[in-house]
Amino acid sequence: MLALEEAVECLLHHTRSITETERIPLLTSTNRILAAPLSAMADQPPFPRSPLDGYAVRGQDTEGAKKDFPKRLKVIGAVYAGEVFCGTVKKGEAVRITTGAPVPEGADTVIRQEDTDYGREEVEIYRASFPYENYCRQGEDYRKGDVLFEGGMRMDGIGIALAAGLGKEFVEVYRKPKVAVISTGDELVQPGIPLQPGKIYDTNRHLISGRLLDFGITPFASLHGRDDAEEMAETLLELSGKADLIVTTGGVSVGEKDIMHQVLPLLSAEKLFWRVEVKPGAPTLAAVLGSTLLICLSGNPFAAAANFELLVRPVLGKITGDKRLEVKRHRAVMANDFIKPKGTRRFLRGYAEDGKVWASAGNHASGTLSAMARSNCLIEIAKEQAGAGKGDEVWVYLR
View (cartoon, rainbow, N blue to C red):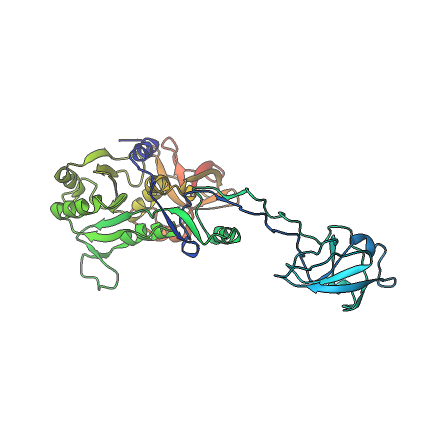
């Protein structure tokens, strides 16, 4: 039996990072991982621009301006966003300007139109503005050569906007990960089919597939398999040459229908480990099929959910290079009591907020899932602890 950290280290050692890249249209790059940094090819903004509607002037020409003692300037023209004013603002002159338009040569500030009489040939200025007060300098956002997005970053709406601002129509990203999900068990029925006696709905396949989708990963395959070792071996063999990772649930304990122990010899797979020193989900199995990593989780829903976060998530992070998938762990103070016999490293459903964490109310058995709807983290209880009392400090793993 391996400690959790040993199991993670073993899995990561046998995990291959994606190196293949592809060039895709910018607007299709959401949730994709950049293969190369995005650097600015020009200053942004590429010219001094106005942050508001008003008049471009020389700041010194507005000194002392007040409502009762306005400064009067000659309006020599107008400039709008997308245009350039061909001329220079001299002493006693102003150019009407709109938001985003280039500030004309000679002007060093913009008077907002609300502080004027909106004059067209001559304008009255009712408020002084010092040089560069209302003025966006060239390169104020970023300079040519600045790296805006590092390679390995996950693209989102902000990343797409930044890339568009760089003039990028296409971006270089790593190919999508290929992750297959298989739930096992003759007792499982798919949603939409009426339940017969002894049957239950297949939550695990949807749990794992849904969590992948949370991370922007569309399952390469999402299947249900019967408790038949030979059938499962055929399915895994077909997927192993195509998938980066296969995650299964069920069939890993010591019962008569725990078929995964029979499947591995049929495939001549390299077994990495069986059993991890955690509760729930101790009977976790891992193996390598050719170039594909196989992680077999418990069929108990919460055990599958917990060990997906603790074991599968780090593997996904290495496969994709997505830093967002790194396990986030911090200390928090228990806000309620959870007492259990010591002797096993245990993970609970919890809700963390503002440095405190509450053990979720309800049933904490490994076969139940409902309490997960009210949780946003896992609470770790060390094996030498008899649970955790209110005020105790614990480790929290955020989902």
